[in-house]
Length: 358
Image 1 (cartoon, rainbow, N blue to C red):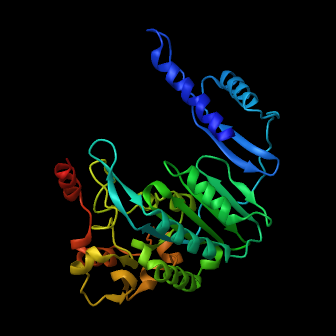
Image 2: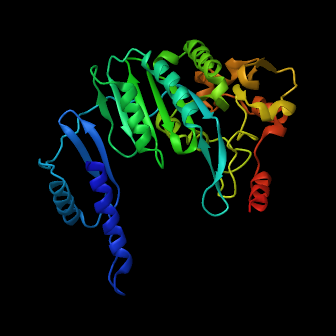
Image 3: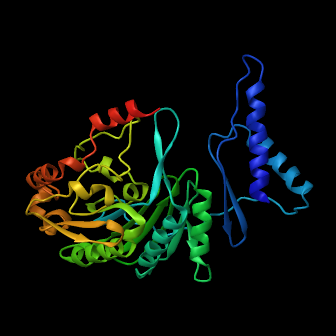
């Protein structure tokens, strides 16, 4: 009922601002978000709200009209542990089954199959919770602050509700924080993206080997529900969770992120990685060079792995870090891009995508 009341009040206010006289400044309701907490429901209001007191009064009236009693009060948000801002990590990013659908002018988005999205999310959740959470588990929904997940909470229900809230926009992230390791699961339902991040000092040295094996096992287990997946080395947990790590790696990509088109990885990929899952539409363009291993998976998918995973996924050695060198080195990356050139999404393809759209 509270969510419906918030929706009605803010929607009516925004509509009222469309018919203001000339030279009267327009106000906006801003983002109003809700989250369950042990004490009741937490309501957050975005900074852009220009009529907070007015809208809060209207919301109170609306709730009382519906027979809801209670009071609003300031809420002291519980503190939760977070991953380090900069740390060794491996990122598994997956695009689940779905289809391209129109989205605005000359653009498309990826509409995920809801059942496939939940199956992949559930598998990722199990992997996330396998981490020993000495410092707790938390859940972040869209722009809400992270909230603790208590042992008595049904984390599957919380995650499902969060995904429903972010269905049109935003990301849901569950974090399991340990003493020397963390795992986080991020779901962006409006783009069909599921990301599992495994990071911390436990990955130093040869620690990446077991982590990469476990992430690859997750790809195998969910392959039928995926059009694409990759595993890469990273440093910034927050960027990986948001799906923005490729833009922050300092590596020039074959194509810019563009309003003209998106790869969506059902036909083309944005770059090459040491571990990738390729879907059925890549069958006639698989890499044939000696550096690549191919393993058939369910549903016509293929797991493609570079023979030298150490070169792609190990942490930078001290001598490399001092020189600013990050794996993979330029020669390996250039050779891999040459091997997988028919798969790469380019600016030319993006422009052609726009020209072919109705």
